[in-house]
Image 1 (cartoon, helix red, strand yellow):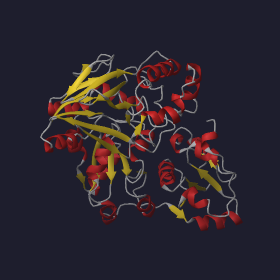
Image 2 (cartoon, helix red, strand yellow; image 1 turned 135 degrees about the vertical axis):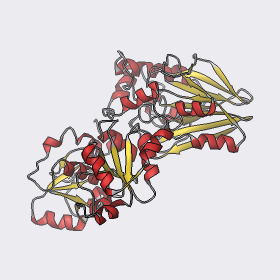
Image 3 (tube, one colour; image 1 turned 90 degrees about the horizontal axis):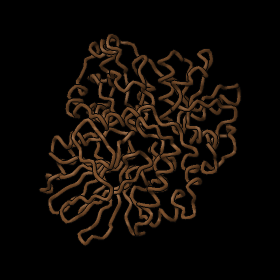
Length: 470
């Protein structure tokens, strides 16, 4: 028996490779499927099943492409319907992979078709569950993402309570838990940084598995503090349900080198968004006017999904040398398939053509602290609500990056703002979006709140985020 977790940090997502006797099951694959094909081939094995725990909302799965490539059967839980061929499993149905048995447990709540896959070893002993978004380490899946459902989030939370109590908690304490996500995913609110756990530990420590918890208490606690889902979630879920262009097609049309004149023509005449995915330091030093910064070195795909509202938006890329394929790939993971190419030669080629360049003013935290002593500064904190409430600069204005497109009217073009986040990534994203909308009096605070706390700038007393009621 071989079990391998293939974890992608940008999405905080775990896919799984299970092999026995030359047969393979892949659970929740990513969009780019070659890694699974290659792994099976290297082991002289054949992919038999592609098991989907549910219609994912936070990424586009590779199940459709992988089935076409390998002939494997796509399996979803009870009630799932799609625009492509699948096997809709029954609750309790068992699938054989070599000497292993995988039992389908219908666990609705996160979504209606959600399934947990219980892996039994060759002796029939319960070995592990692949719990999708039903059970995380430290949390459970949010119950507010069902596609086109007339059920309320309270209804789904009640279903999730029953699924956990009737299907998962009765399992033995030594069963291994392999969830679909870890810390950083928006599919839950309190996910652990660990990506593999033991069910017995979750029964003891996970707030949602308290033995004495009533259904009413569960519904209240699981819904408390859930932020609105990112706008791309519903769009990704529909792509997973209806199908999509092949990844090879997306890569072929998106990973295209463009000279500066071709690049500019697409930006001007095709209304393509100029997306700069270099480091924030490079963007600060020089960037194409009206370009948006979202760097590959941070939470790239989720921020793209949260901030670029049109999933079909034409995009042209400014990338670090050799990173164009990675950028197109990571965009496709969240359904942004309309990349038209990248600037060949980067900013240097753009400059060589004599085209305009803009910069973003940035100050060290020491310079920021020095100015704060002698003048009244307009400070814009773009961290999330919980971060801001837990501690912030006294009198700082809060504008969460998540909501910058909706709340831009709260910022004045006539004022100069010092913009900061926690470490410097999100503040440059925010500044780039504001600059593209005509806000030009912006100064980035290098190092963000982590650096600010080391100065004598006055901040509010720290409140532990776990005690906050959002």
